[in-house]
Length: 339
Image (cartoon, rainbow, N blue to C red):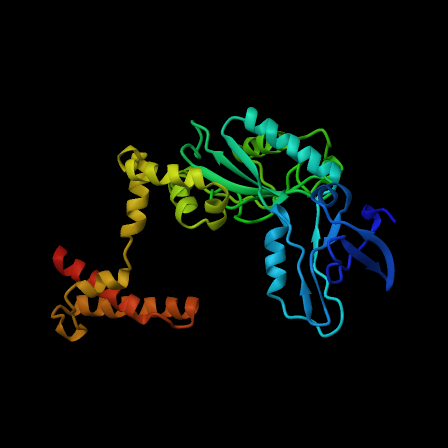
């Protein structure tokens, strides 16, 4: 039976330098030698390792499979039966197509876009979109993923954006005409460049879809200002896939404070300085109702406290009374000041 038609491989302990013996449904099928070309070109699914009679056998493969092999070694052995660990592979067509597209995108990258596959899985691509000028995303750096099916290019990928951006929910599949939400609209002639260019075009528009959110232009600009720092310090996958961009980001962050959009800088400063009204009230000199000499002021303060407590009880079940005590004190002091 051809290798590509095997549903599952079970690999017993290694035969002496001659290769491996494959079993399926309890019967011997073929004696095979596992080679790199065979793995990549002829089979969609391959079992990397197995445990038999408490003896763990490892097939140490380079590139795509090494991490999976190391992971399997740490799993508990299973009595006297075979343990099977499978890695789903890209089809020959998908591998060939994505390899070609990577070469093309390196030679001629689309404007504002960088993209590359995961070194350990060519079906998982990572992209970075630089916010175009004259848009709320200007200066932003947006990381996301394309997850291709094993039978690409006949089916579309799942599209996600990881960096907070104000346009899409983070780490959420996006419903776009070139995503896996609409396989009926997919055109196999479309490429990674086509997909990401379409994503950028949709991002700079205002059309709603599954996975999109509504924010103001100022909020988008604030997130654009934070995006480089997020990717550099909080986005683990970004740091693994784009180490050279991280290095450039660190230098840019050190020199960019004085070049920041004044309105965005003010919004960030205001957000950081936003203070709790209870804390603000606590800083004021405390005033007891009994200490208020003017009867009208005392009555007004009592009414304010009573009304605010009722509103709080209706909204939050009577929680946070200190908030309104502080607010009432501020109102009283304002009245005294005006007199």
